[in-house]
Image: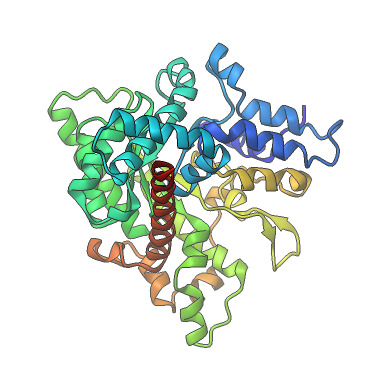
Length: 399
């Protein structure tokens, strides 16, 4: 049996989890496109690998799949709609007929909830077969309202009703962490998204701990509760201000040094959580396959630097496909999670204000989270995808 790179990563720790970072509704279409690009279909094992990750028949009959969970966000939901626009346009009209007098925004939100509900229903057998341990699907509150706590809480509660295996994604703003505490207090599983920095992770852990104390005091059932804290790795190093600040100070900054900084931030949060026995799992996303400028080798440091950890790695379609042709070039050290980040790189990066803000636990106050460079860039991108989906609904209603 030829193993996928991600299957080999998972073998470095039985508690490591590989998740699918897109709607499960698009998997069959994506798989077909990916296998069409297989240069050696008779010997590569690609078809078997992708079947092991997610096969609808196996999910339904055995409650099993290689992916242990699913994450979605507005751009990914838009992707699902674009794959079958006529079907979803018809769904928009059905929703509008069932909601007389509803405006475009109301119909959009109902459509988004439908995408979450159908995706969660597709993998529900995995959730049931595992006793609630696996088979969760994350649905995200509207990224246009990252600082509106009341609206996020209302939407989060609605998302949570879309299935017993739904986890609610909440952004890493000051108001978002207040919502995470409230949802946790109600026994609702959460995924902290749009999060990049050690101060955010510390605040999320505090919110989760406070919510759990309230839930236990109220006798809330927490037997199937889960929490993950997302680290958007490449978005931190590439979309934030590190490169701009380095250039302004005449500091040469190589890609490998940026990756060292992303590694340092995530490992700091990961080990802090472990030392304090915190129940949330760190989740790694925004990952790359690239050429290492130090060795000239093909690498995925966002995987390889964390071998041996029990993290969640949530992988979008393009990343999963990008790993397949280079499988023999990527290997794993089961002790990589305990390896110290490059000290020379850290010494250089500590000269940058935005790196210090990300690395130091007191680098930012909660009021500053939503103004951090990587947060603002990601918020803008996600909000734009949401507006495109709203416009899709508008055009469908207009015929």
